[in-house]
Amino acid sequence: MIRTGIVGLGFMGQQHFAIHQAMDSIQLLAICDKKEKRRAAQAEAVGGNIGEAQTLDLSALARYATVEELIANPDVDCVDICTPTYLHADMTVKALEAGKHVICEKPMALSADDCQRMIDAAVASGKLLLVAQCIRFWPAYEKLSEMIRHGELGRLTSAKFTRVSPMPTWSQDSWLLDNALSGGAVTDLHIHDVDFIISVFGRPKSLSTQAANRFSSGQKLDHAITQYFYGDFVCVAEGGWGFPGTWPFEMAFCVLGDEGCLEFSTAKSPMLTFYPMSGDATHPQVSDETGYQREFAYFAECLETGKHPDRVAPESAMESVRVVMAERHSAETGEVISL
Ligand SMILES: NC(=O)c1ccc[n+]([C@@H]2O[C@H](COP(=O)([O-])OP(=O)(O)OC[C@H]3O[C@@H](n4cnc5c(N)ncnc54)[C@H](O)[C@@H]3O)[C@@H](O)[C@H]2O)c1
Image (cartoon, rainbow, N blue to C red; front, side, top):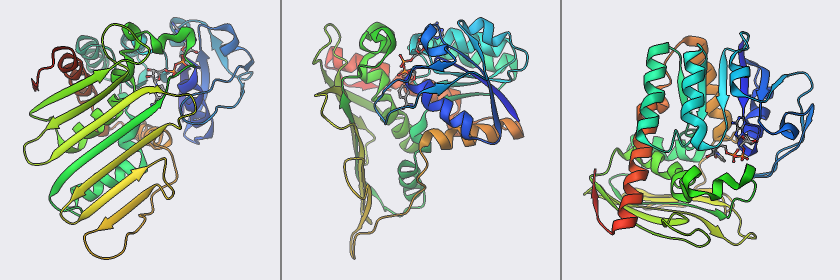
């Protein structure tokens, strides 16, 4: 049994809470949130970009206001960090140094230096660190990755990824809308596709990003389109959170090869379709679990076996942060950035 504690019971922490509660191999012992209402015996629920969380019954759990108190609980083996991104590095390092395993929400951190501190702490402690890049575990994306690996799409021609949503209004003290704390949509939202692209296609030779703001001022981070230059196929990703409040969150991809095209969109029904070069379109069956559930099942397996979580090696999550920083630099300067 893995005995866990969650830090940050906002939108993502509440999604994780439901997963911890549902898994047989996990016993949730403790939670921590700096906001009193979020750590009350009956805690307030938060809305987010994927579904609505339920009100939480925390009465049976140890409840703390600071991460230090939670980490000091000797019964907790594994800490789940769901706090704002600017806190990830310090909290992860503290938890690892205290001998806890850590699962930390994406983005790993706001700078490569902070990511490196997290990696160094994991190495020094010998404990496991998984950065929750959930799209690598999202069934339709797993299917895409598998079809590419097995050559079922043939030689690739193009790949397009999309992730667009209304402005995120739920975050505590609006930290998500403060680009210094969240890195804006480019770092917070679009990184999902950056991370997936790198995990499947490897690091591109170079990239070029154009970005714009809708509600932020300063660096353009509300909406971006990046072209990744691999040389042998075309790859583009679009991410932004400047859409009207009535716009339904959408994540999507369309990948074309000389054997056919795999298309996925949360705005379509069915969401996943394979169009072969000849013959009828089909709808590949994939698990109806979310990537959140699957990443936890994977991490639990790693913790039980002691295997390092190499499906998202911390170094690869750091690489995604680096590529996002290169995109931000490209958007600012108008330059093509070599990687
Ligand atoms: N994987 C995904 O699909 C996904 C989706 C949304 C958010 N996220 C990530 O999850 C993380 C949290 O985002 P969110 O949307 O849940 O934010 P949020 O504002 O809804 O929740 C953050 C919570 O952390 C608490 N908190 C803040 N500072 C704290 C501190 N010092 N000690 C203890 N608690 C503290 C806040 O009170 C709040 O309850 C971010 O890194 C974000 O990028 C991931």
